[in-house]
Length: 332
Image (cartoon, rainbow, N blue to C red):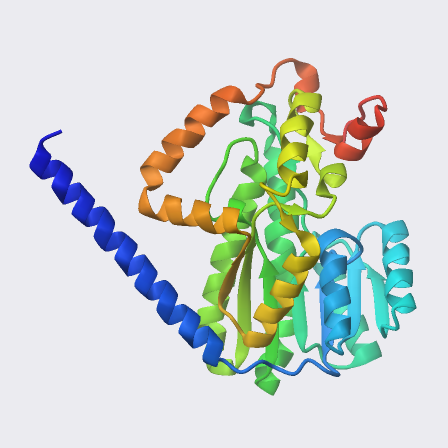
């Protein structure tokens, strides 16, 4: 490369870094000045609230003084989470709901209103994740990911929104993912749904500001929530479990889930438009913003190191719980 061309590229990179730094500084100052909302007595609905990050968020909202409604598909886990929150002293309502079903979502909102009154805060947290190479994925995997991770958030949001707009008050937090801003290999259906959810959430924030309904887009990196056992693995199941488990459990690659939940609730109280959780996720977003082509090429090289999918069994989805228990593989 010619020295002059090299100098121009360095100047361009320097100007980008300066612009990012200046915007970050302005955003930080604005965040410090933003008043924190008082959540005492507010009604909060948390989808996917029976375990993991959802349950941790519900606990934090209880500590802030909220009345808590949680929903989930698994009735056993839901009952366990209900008992957990009751023992802590929470005023809690636990309701079965599959967010893939629009009618169930609308019924859920009606039941929460009937028991607690108007919903002041909605946390869209329910989701699924499939791990494996594209050759192991089916159209159904993409449809299921979109139906749960994206449409579930849309159904619940549209159910609570009319009343929030009418009252000119309300907060919505959408738990998306770093995978919804930067695509990495072997998570494609999940990432497609999360990219859609990020766009939905950011658009909502812009459109609802005039109605005093504040929408926060939460972009977490990997967190130590025990998510491995609930993930679905395709392709070479044991090898896919191995790399995913390592990333989701090591302190260097993942964030403490309790700290993440507290930061999310703080973002809700502050009315932040967006918060990225974990230094790893923030760094990845910065690198991708500065050099998207280079980032994509690096992930292309990384994919060469990951296991490929072959054979009929590669399309079987096996839960992490089944794999960790060493049980015979079962399709989902």
